[in-house]
Length: 170
Image (cartoon, rainbow, N blue to C red; front, side, top):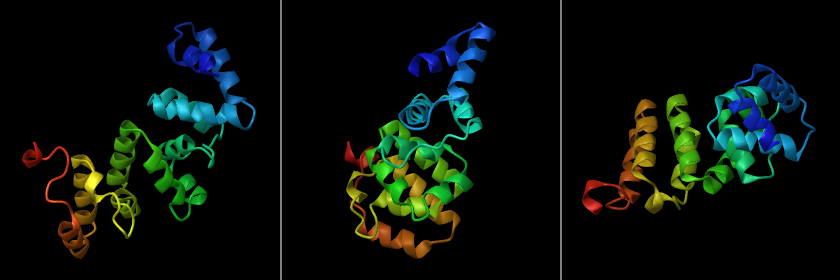
């Protein structure tokens, strides 16, 4: 499957790209489709994401990488797939730093206040001390947009005095 994806993305011969695209659109259900979805997200490949979407592939629920991959799919499909945000929470926890940045950026752009709870580690706020500067900024921006001053104030009281990457922690 990886070879097909590389042929589709990298080959300059249109006939090779066509054959690769057809093969990718007709992958059997299961691991091959999951691998394509994961590869598309990990490589930030719009071409592979487009193929997976056209074919109606959705990343599976089982693997953390698959859950992380779902952050690249249309919001309506995701909400039908992950009603309570459990899969997004698990995916965010298992994602690489790059995928976390993309999840955070998508959440910020969409104003997803549910992501704030994921970023801070739920009601127990388990992730406050390990949040990056970008995560803090995204949380503040999302909560500011929704006029959640009380939530921002509670976070300010619970937050560590310096977070990684701040000017004062160096």
